[in-house]
Image (cartoon, rainbow, N blue to C red; front, side, top):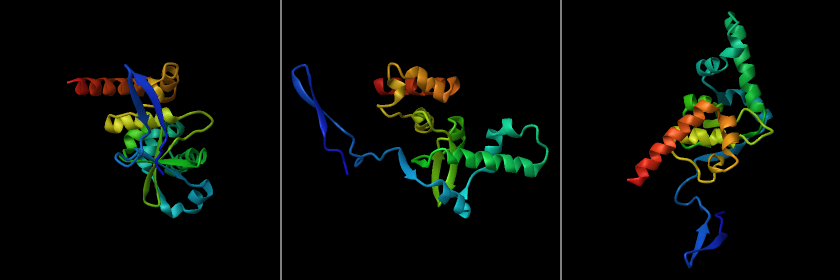
Length: 180
């Protein structure tokens, strides 16, 4: 159901209303999916992930291993551990496994739905999703913590310096483009 409430404010004597996005004209970038972890574990035939890509992501856990079976076991355990933290997964409009891992999101497919796991809980990890959106399509939600006065340090802490700087460069280019 679309939000119908609005805020009213006055700019230069003109009564303005700020409406909420209805989702009718522009789909949200992410759709949330709540999937219980036991359903994921019991639906092992319905889940897939890019082993080669994830083994590179988890290289710090496997670098001292020579045994292929042990490497596979470590990567698989790490993957399922990352999915176990929170049963909410995000389906993006644009799915890019490389960018997901760059943003410390875990990409996977469950029942033919391409999803991203936050790979953590107990703190606000939404900056990871904002970073993913910027790096995949060059846009960011106007309510992102990236724009918050006291939130920039937290945002940078969550996504890391390198990703934070990439976001700044992309958004600066977008800003120049829209000024023209």
